[in-house]
Length: 168
Image (cartoon, rainbow, N blue to C red):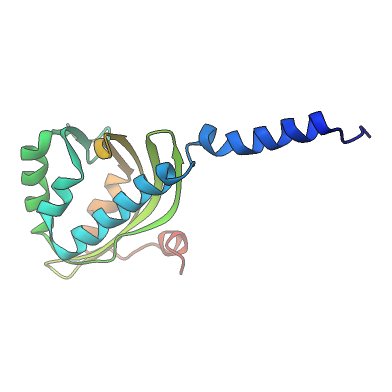
């Protein structure tokens, strides 16, 4: 076993101090993307599209169904998409399950949990990647099962494995 020297102790302390910055979690840097996202969720639950648009960069590219549909580009298209989608939802319990911040990116494991205007309960696990520029979301990519989403919106029961992912 090596002896603890003053040099080794200083090197370890320096490494420990630099680690949060290397992981993107120094000071407010890590808290800010998550806080912005959590506020966005609360704004969505209240139906406050204006507040959501405030945290989006003017040049946002939003892949609301990454790989399944073309993205919306810019705030005007984002507004139109949110008005359409939000108009189909009666209530929302959208939530974050886990997250990580690396540099200017926020990674989310979350649960879309809402009731449609037709009374269908949708419980949809998703993963999202959010890139920030100047404190605003400039790129947004959501990944989820379109098949599960369509089935639940059509009134099929929520599978037990989805309830398990949702925590019960």
